[in-house]
Length: 315
Image (cartoon, rainbow, N blue to C red):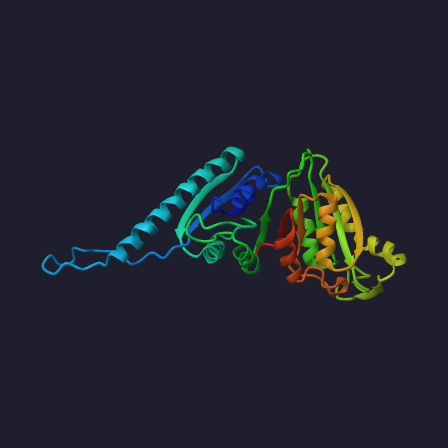
């Protein structure tokens, strides 16, 4: 069986440290491959060779020499950070194969390029960061760029100061294959006993369903604007709920009406969710529940971790 691959962006900030701590709450397997990436967001000038010609030695401006020293210093800092956090992860997950990579590069694009080459199943980044390495590794716009451009799942990780021995997972659902992939991802993980799951559907006025599973191209629409029809909505998501229960997870279906982003965030906060799972896209019938802008807004504003689930592309 192929091991799960996890790419972790790290910059030494409090949010990056929180992301590393959050790994223990992500249901990740005991055996996996992890790659820790640290980036010094600095420009590295071309190499200096002052001895090309002893007769006419190359003149190197002092500013260029200072730039070289600064870049070398920041890259060493990045390498030290990568080594330290790699050891921390190894101690937490002794069954993981952990490697590290320190680069002088633009953080978001470095993560995306490495992800394109290494093909991880999951990218983990913190919600915010700072310029400790000369740049803004996970500073809002960076994590959002990774979220937009990555072809695999992305976890925007945060820790919650809640004293409990189990986890609460909120999954946004809308009867689309993207939402089903989020449910499947949760089912495939390893969660502590007592973990609870809420399937949250935020309804609009109509919703598409497939009356005959053997004919997925055939759809009908049901009215869901009135609460009297919500039992039918709940029934639609019963197979997903049963799948989660079969994985040992206590599961309930919750239906709300309103703005999808606000309802997801409010439900997660009120319930004390540890992580929100969403697909990157969704179906029209639930106000386009997970269409890009919603998943982006939720990942930026949530007080819990948010994982945007994409199925790994088959090469």
